Image (tube, rainbow, N blue to C red; front, side, top):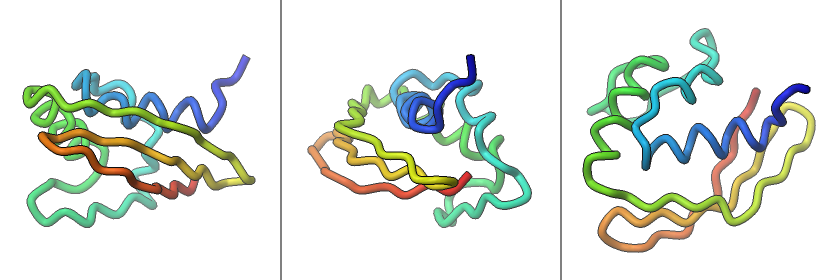
Length: 92
């Protein structure tokens, strides 16, 4: 059974907590754009960022996720020393 896109994004964002590099496999190298100038391009850069962040004991919670065609919309709670509520959009 195929893993849903929402679950793939949940696993990707949860890897901020765990540092698990396997979850970034969902990233399409040909389409991915890294907007953080302090992070290297591609899934390898993202995996290194998440590994570094995981050492700070962040809390990541997907409150809800919605899938519409090639898009996943995620209502997120992040705690990196202070709580932030975010809305993320991902395109597959």
